[in-house]
Length: 480
Ligand code: NAD
Image (cartoon, rainbow, N blue to C red; front, side, top):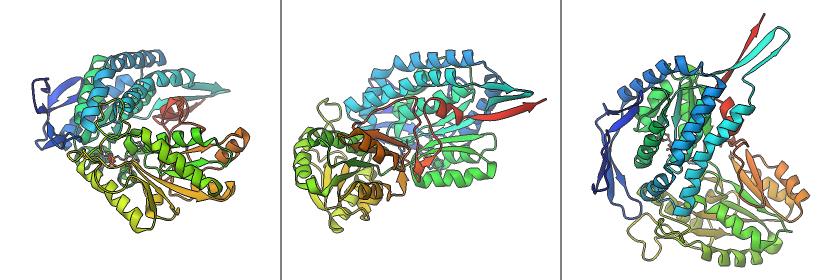
């Protein structure tokens, strides 16, 4: 069993979860987990290797025989048990997300709660999804696709695990989860919860390790039928390419450079605070973050003033402090990445309205950056085209609705977007012309039955509700 006790100053994790048991890692490589608020080692994690992965795949393959034949009612029961077991650990999951990832407490809880909601949403989605339909002498059934590899990113590890697992279980698939290697403490709490849910052995296996070992084995192994991945475009491309050799089905949830369009009839005192919340979601380390703010040129001065006032609400600091809105970046690498983009923005001629380079005063120890807003940004600048994955917002001015739509769509990404305005019909007209998997009007909102996923480089396929379940199913027709 993993040894994590409150007395340990440095926690150690040496096990994976395979076939319903915590088993010692075959892989021997050890990775330090660093606390992002102070750069100190808080855990040592033994990473799994190809052997651990193959053991987990074999367990999932054995379990698939029985689990793929479960009835809808049985799967609904498992989803309810998962919901209950993970709900019981919301406080623990939130606390460990704050500690290990540096997620701000108020947002970390929302992320964990959305993970819990995913089980309830899958339950509803499954109830509404006809798994068998007949007409004439034809019968069509939706069959589980097989063993699925679920690979997650570090910025909302608990949510991604729940979301993917919920859809897979609803579909009757068995899984091997490869969580982000940067989320091992969070994963450990999650695995305890999943273990408590009491799924049949082998239905859910978890191997912690690197993408290039555990992840790559999942992608190339012929016994894995499907990969559901959340992460970067670069790794998404690798998965699609390498998975082709075994004809993997793939769901890829990738990056974004999401636009928020403020129409010229918007009430700025409401629209700008909402736009700032969207931009600095999860300390800017969010795929959906609205990092391009498109504003009418005619109201630019007013916009700038409202942003400066609004940014007072975005205190940066200790993520455990409930008044803090922006925590540290997850790692030194991520800190350097964000800083390099801030430098690039300045070099390319954008003007810093708020923030800028360097650590905020008094926060020199951790991976903190200054929440930064650039104005005078042109959409072809690097900071407007590339995903920074940090608290950096680019304000871009436009002349007409058509120009705003053109700029919004002038991106390789198409994950999320927002439109803010008083005339709802006009806002809807603009929303209908945006090339993105999801558009919110007048505020960040969620519906766990609505599909989530990207156009263009933001990904392939959809998650959530019945759309997420369908991604783990194969239609099969029997004709008499
Ligand atoms: P990443 O691509 O570096 O890693 C994601 C996961 O893939 C990790 O578990 C990693 O170990 C694994 N991996 C790495 N190489 C692999 C390989 N060769 N084969 C298989 N697996 C491999 O991404 P990250 O830095 O963890 O996350 C940040 C990225 O995730 C951002 O681009 C962000 O936009 C994206 N993201 C997307 C969504 C969405 O829903 N669309 C949500 C959150 C994050």
